[in-house]
Structure formats: C-alpha cells, structure tokens
Image 1 (cartoon, rainbow, N blue to C red):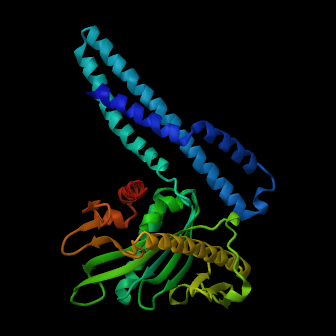
Image 2: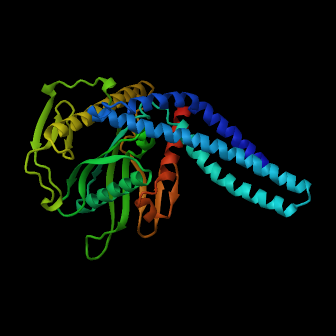
Image 3: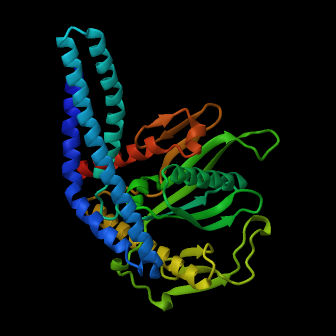
Length: 374
C-alpha cells in the first residue's frame, strides 16, 4: 500500500514537472540573472522591481522542484532499506524505515499539492502582479471596522507568504476603521492567486461599538485586478481625466504632509476614481494612480467582453460582487466560503492571515469551472 502511494506520487510529480518545464525555467532564470546584474538596472525602478520579483519567484519554483525530486528519491531509498532489513530478518528495523517513509510521504504529498496549484495558474492575466482594493459597505462604523480587519488579514497573509506589498492609499473613517484601502502586491502570479478573493465578505459578530453588544452584520467589498504592463497599451486621453491634488494624512491628523503630494484621478467616462498618497512626490503618486486606473480600465474591458459573450449564449447572470465568504464570530465560530464549501472554526487564525486553504480551494474551483465551460 505504501509503495503504491509513493508510486502514485511519482506519477503526479512527473505530470506537474511536464507542465512547469524546469529546463525552460532554467533558461529564463539565466536571462533574469543577467538582467539583474546590469549596473543600470535600478535606473528604472519599476522594471527593476519586476525583474527581481520574477527572479525570486523562478528561483523558488526551481528549488521546490529540485528538492521535491530529491526527497521522492529518498523515499524510494527508505523502502529499499526496509526490504533489505526484512530479508535479513530484522523486522524491527524494517518497521522503523517504513514508519519514517510514511511520515515523510505525508509531508511530500502536501508540498506536491502546493506545487500543483502553480500549474493551474494559466489564465490570461494570472502571472501578473495585483492591486487589491478593500471598501467598507453600508453600516457606518461597523462596516468601516470590518474593512480595517480585512486589511490586516490580507497584510498578515502577505507577510506570512513573504510577499512584497505596499498599502498605496487609505481613506480613514472618522470614528474607527477605514472607508477604503488599496494594496499593491508585487509578486508574480499574485493576480492568479488572489483573483477569487474578489467579492463581498460578510461578518457576523457582537458589536464592540454599542453598550449592549448587539449582534451585528457587516459587509465589505474586495476588488482584485491585474497590474497593468506597458505592453497592454491602454491609452487614456487627458481630456477624459480629472486630476485633484491634496495633502496626504493619517488618522487623527497623523503624518500630515506639508505639500499637496497626494493625487486623485477621476476617469470621467466611467466615473472610476483612484487615489494615491503613499509616494513622497506628486509626480510619483500620479504615475502610480495612472497605473492602477489603467489596470481597472483593462479589467473593465475584459468584463464587458465576457458579459457580451454570456448574453449571446443566453446567460446573463452576474456574479461580480456577490457574497463569497461568511465570517461568523457570534453566536458560534465559523468562516465558510460559499463557493468551494471550505470552512473552519479557527476564526482567529483566518483573521490573522491563515488563508492558504481558502486560496488553494479557490484556484482549484476556478480551474474546474473553466474546464466544465469549455
């Protein structure tokens, strides 16, 4: 039985490697290393960050493949040792080798499953970096506090994954929490990984904002879009953009700038508004805001094309913005994804960034859905 499981894992690993093409990744890695060693690399900071991020991701993926192949071979060796001990009459030693092999097999299965996830990220924009925006829903201070909890949850998730990210803009609520926040995740495949986090997140809890601690339901919306690249060519005429500048500030007047460095762009035809205040200069904030605006227009174009295709097929059901996940803290503890069915009672862990099981299930869910629609 154990040997059969190991053999099945070898087959699965072989299929994954065939998709990931490590030899091709080696060539890509050599090219990225040459680009990263260029003395003028950081003269273009945006391009430098992209190259170094891709380099880190490719190195990590190749190391995973090499380490997993080595550990699979070690499992085979343990089975051979166990057989030799049986043949020599030492059943106790054989049992120890088999026990060790079983323990290592369980860990390997989990890590190979993680590698398999990477093969499912093959969508048009999956390999892109991402921009995530969190907005509080109706409900005043309750919803604003919930939005701030989601900002912390995702920030902790990125930190645990060792992802490079920045909070580019926050709009604070007067009493507590936030009205909105924009996060840029500077990691390859960030969009593919996080795309299905987009939607409405619902919180049920005892309110910390009233004396009777009544049970309250709050909503917050999460938007995830792929970060624009120069090759996408989304041209926006100046006549279609309204530019406002203002002074960046934190909650309660903290960190107030003495110059009008923050920038707000409004795309007049669509009404899309993007604000940026993270950078030190107005020019940098305007460039960052323009990049996000272009990203939103790109995804809007894709959504419109997809909607037209659905209407032609007779399916006009919209799913964007629908409630996707419930976080119940009272009267019981439960976080449940309404699409994949994944749930856990470890609510504190989830709100502290333990999202792996939800994200992986979403990626598999999307892959299955795409296969069924072909």
